[in-house]
Length: 509
Ligand code: HEM
Image (cartoon, rainbow, N blue to C red; front, side, top):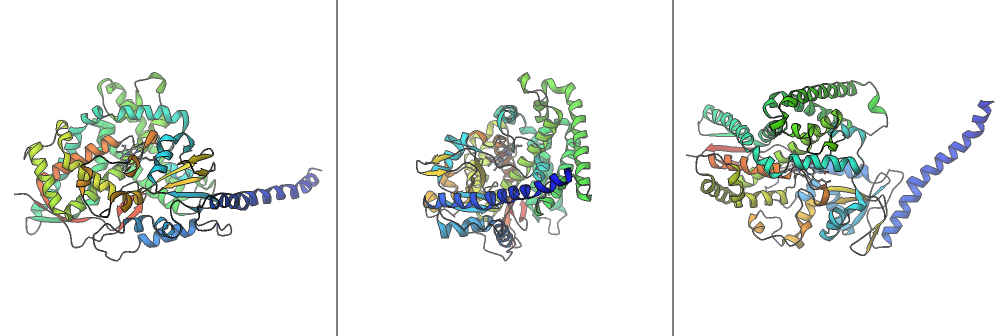
């Protein structure tokens, strides 16, 4: 009986299935496309059979990034290399333009007025794009991906953890980590054949340094044990990136494949280690200023996080903080290696503010004005975050004329804004820190840390860390870009030099 009923219902299910597919993949996208066309917004046409333009975007981006021929070290081609789809389509269709990611409409935007509305004044109408469940392996359910009430609680705790006073307490730790790295460099320079200079990849060095610093700020005196957590996290990142390269199949992550089983094991070991750290921290929590201590005992009793939430935030801070800050340092040194006159200016300021031999202390930081301008100019030309994404949670009108339907995704082309000659002038692609001497005339013309309620919560740490590392190194070494360096900015989660950053260092006499 039930078999016959099933047989009768089968055509009905099939019809509903086909109807849903047609609705989602043909009717709705074509209607949205028409909606934007009527407002003068065009773009590469929606192609349901090929699942939109996503495959094309990815292929083109990879091809661009793999374009490894040595180009001169200048900054004109950054947008073209790190967001080739934006670069090509905006030339044909103008800006904003519409493109497709699967059946999701994406509006690419580089107008600072629109970006300001999306991130700041109308931020309530936009949310984060929902992550592929596999990428949650990188930062779990931490701050970066949370929304709503839980985000408010996590954000409050994180803001408390990263407030400037707290970050200043970490200065001795940052100095210590940097000093250890420099002791290693000195030993290597002494061992070098000519005993005066050494060539190495600063990108790798700054990644290790940044990991070390995050580990110290997160776990304080237990940082070497904490480092194990981040080593596991590093292995997890490799596996997650491998998974993300494949087409996402719902439920696949639960199958006991070799990769999945390794990921589960890493997850289990991470949780266990964090649990142990929490136990250790509980006794010392009263006067501890570590990130972990703040997560365990936030100032508001209602803000208590459970173990999984604490583990996820530890992952988030590592993931969001290590890569970005290491890349900022890498690009800063490459730029100062290229522009020796700015290296000299930075050195002169550091000598004046910090004294020739002493290490910087927290009171020096505000006086490092040239260093700050150099970091800003680096963040402008090589923003680690490259672009930001949002999704309209309701119908919304932008800049008084553009109606954006709920569900539309927004690609905020940060790197393009930072290189726009209409905003920055004819010399937009030139490294000129002097432009940061005057206050900027538009909030959304420069937003390497984002804007609005979701602005980077670790910004204070990133800037303090970058200032100290730069001050310490510039005070002790002279450096230049190696002839073996190949200039190939590439987006791989963050903006990185594709072939590393080979530089030549020598001790100052
Ligand atoms: C140069 C270094 C850094 C850059 C350029 C950077 C950039 C950004 C940007 C652009 C956002 C906003 C993302 C969005 O609106 O969608 C963001 C958010 C975030 N950043 Fe950073 N970041 C840096 C360093 C750090 C550090 C050191 C930490 C922590 C250790 C950190 C933790 C976070 C977190 C947790 C968020 C999410 C905040 C929220 O959604 O409420 N970042 N970052």
